[in-house]
Structure formats: structure tokens, C-alpha cells
Length: 132
Length: 265
Image 1 (spheres, one colour):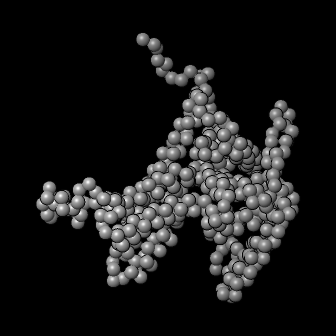
Image 2 (cartoon, one colour):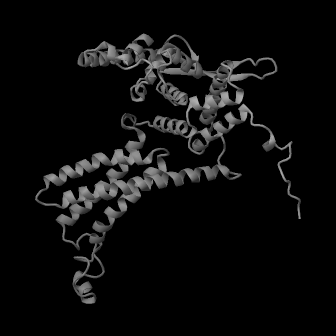
Image 3 (cartoon, chains in turn purple, red):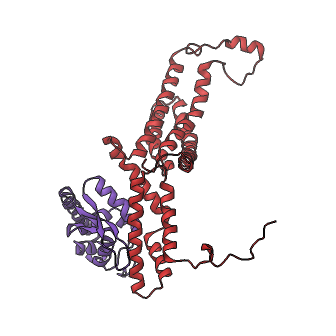
């Protein structure tokens, strides 16, 4: 049987990364690093991806109107200057898109389960469902 | 003759130990460099700021785990991904976002552009072959010399069945078309132009193969389709690759000039 710690196929992740990002933003606005941190926390570090690929995707989601973003000024610590960070939030259109993607994902997972017939083999599916 | 120092003076920046910030700055430069001249300044600045903030937080997290600052910065960069790969991903996403037409949004801007270029090449070829088939060979554009006159100068066997402009069009255009179409694709597609040519040319080649099969027992159609696979595809891909690299170098040179394009462009 496959170990839980074995890395998950990155191709599985590629098509679903946007959904994970939208799901994190559903709980409130967050900056890029916080999104990565939250994904890792909720998936118990099971998903490994190049963190830098998150930003092109966030910009894409923003271009499609699913997320909105704005600069936030963080007061500097003692002796340090002010810092800025880009904070992303989910739009109404993004909420609708997330629901649509979730329905599609659940249909897909159910179909795969019907073929394989073994819930134990669907580590990825269980992890994603736990995520939401 | 000026004296040459045996070693770098201790106050020189090169003699100072490498700081974590230097490692991150170096990474940011490598990340942004491939985008210069293509992606607007404001978007480059945004990516740079977001990346710098991300790397700083990641580095701080590693430091909390007891990793020394320099090693933490390196590990943060490793987690973020190779600069060239991230820049390529950013460039690809940015370029595809420029698609305005629904067809380009559906199939991808690069693929649509490549398909359009090679489709024009295909249409030109079909037009010429049609004219060649249904009109007399010398009716399209008359040469100043007739085939008979040519044969009086060069006795048979000649390398060509005739020596008309239409014949040259039929022979030269299939040879030149992939260079021209590939060049245009590479000029406008900043990332993965070879993939775009492949995706764009694939449906055209399949169309040629189907038409070629339907035209049996005439073999010209199939020969043309095979020629597209064996010549148009590799030549188109390579030309697009070369053209894209040259265009990128040209854009970067434009930025290096003192009176080059503004940072706001």
C-alpha cells in the first residue's frame, strides 16, 4: 500500500492549485506567503510545489476577476522602515467559481472512486476533501 | 605602470562576507531579468516586491527553526523555485492574459497566433497549387523566356520541367513559408514559441493529411502533408525559437541604451 508520506504526483496538483488558492481565500484575505502556509498546514505538508508559481496564478485569478488585491502597509519594527505587501481577497465571482470547481472536483472524484472501488487508494481525494 | 593589488582591499564590497540580503537580491535580479522589455515595469515591480516579501518571511521562519541566516535565505530561495522557471511561468501567464479575443482566450494567445500564421501560409500554398492545377503553367505569371527558349539555351535534360514564375512559386514558397511564419510567431511570442508552433501547425497538418488521403490515387496531397511534417514543423519551430531569442535580446538592448524606453513602458 502507498505510504501517506509519499509525494503526490505534481500533475494532479497542477490543475487544482487555483481551487486550493480560492478555498484559502474563502476564509478571508491573505498575502501570498500566508496562502502557501495555509495550504501546507491544511494538507499537513503533503503537497509540494514551487512556491514562486503561486504568484503568476494569483495574478491570473485577479485578471479573471476571481480575486482582488491591494497593497497593505506594514509598520516597520524598531529601527526598520515600513514594508508593503499585496493582500488578496475573494470576489463574488471568485466564490461562484470556487463552488463550480468544487462541484466538478466532487463529480470527478466520485467517478474515479467508482472505477477504482477503493477509497483507501484515493489519498489525494481524501486530502482535498479534508482541505475544504 | 599602475600597481596591482595582491588581494582585494578589506573595505571593498567583494571582500565583505555575503549577507542573506545579497543572496535574495541576486535571486530577484535573475527572476526579473527575463521579463525586462516584455512585461511592463509596474508588473515587474509588483512581482519583485511580492517575491522579496515572501522570501523574507520564509527566511525568518527558517531562522526560527535554528538555521543560520545565510543558509535560511538559500533555503527560502530553494523553496520558491529556480528563477528561470518562475520567470518563464510568469511570462507565460502574463502573455496569455493579453488575449482579448474569445478564440485566443479559449485556445491560448500563442497557439492562436501560430495557427493564424501557418494557416495563411497554408492558404497561400493551396491557392497557388489550385492555380497551378487548373491554369496552364505559364498563365499565372509569364516568364520573359518561354520553356522552348530556355531549352534552346540549355539543352535537355533540364533540372526543371519548365522555367516559369509559377513553377518557382510552387517550389520556393513551401520552402520559405515555415521560415516566414516561424519568424513572425517568434517575434511576438516571448515564451515557448516552439510549443506554440507545434500546437498551431498540428491541426493544419492533420487537415493536409486528410485532404491528401481523399485525393488518392493522386499522391501530391499526401506528399505535401508529409513535407509539412518533415520540413515545416522542425523549421518552423527552430525559426520561432531563434526569432524569439533575437527579439528578446533586441528588447533588452533597447533598455540598456541611455535614451531607451522608459521604465514606465
